[in-house]
Image (cartoon, rainbow, N blue to C red; front, side):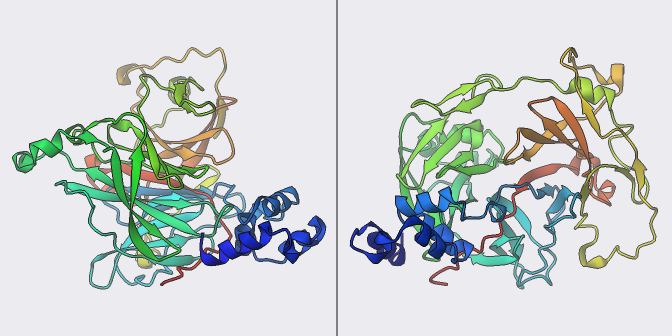
Length: 450
């Protein structure tokens, strides 16, 4: 909390302060005149103000990141993130980050993380060096994120992955947390320090770099582990550093780490826990004092996939076959700098299929081999709906699906295969990562020291 917030809290808690003597309706009339960012800050000043703001719903829900705007998708060999979004009211977010200062370079930005409407991207500056920005695609606000200092831990063959911490309902400020990841074992294994490689991981005291929008600087912050470690440094190196996203929920950052454990980091208490992966396909329950995995949903989509299988897993021709549906794929890479806008190409062939189907509760879902059914698809998780029991999937990076957990309904959303991607080698056509976008229309706080 900065000095201005402290003064506001002291005034609110002081019973002799004029603000404390105002009736709730008068106080509400004063607060509703504030802009959304100021109202979000006022909500955090004291319990009395929090109660007034929430009871009268002064902080407009339509400004908060409560809806799903689409998904940013990162494909192997493509340097620009694609955007896949609903068409109902037209896409409100564009995948083109053409408002970046370096928009004339060979990239519009590669999305590294997303949290409550804010997107962390990296780009190239005019010299070709890596540079990071935090931006809000809904309002086209952006801020430079200065280069993170080297890891405070002296461990060879590591790299840093950064995650956003932001909740506009609690504060207009944001943080970026840098977490250590380990490279695979390579020919340099003998050069690694055996004592360090066999040390426990994560350590009892984990020192991380945290970037604060309040100060505009990176700072070292130490977190004390409560509970057991996950293994050793050496164990981490046997697991690839593929998509491992994070979620900021109720003031706690959950980071998916190598060896598939989850690190639960509390920035307010400077403590963290290691949540070990379950033995089966289960979910985490934190309703009690102890965290445990419990099974919430168990359903196999194989039956539906076999019934509605694709004729081919990849499009053919100049532009290829497009899966028809209520969502659109923007093909940002293909139309970069409009170099293909006027290209003489065939119109896309729409594969008209039944885009909504519901699996029967009596269906016996069993998987069949390729020889038996001709289905060669594979599934990947794109993300979850922020407010509904819906999981979004990619089938063979060709069509997007929405699976409703409560009803077992499956929707075909549309094409997610990038235009021109068939020109890449088949074994290099991969979906590397995806990030759901929940648009936020509240103005972010500027870096105070920038």
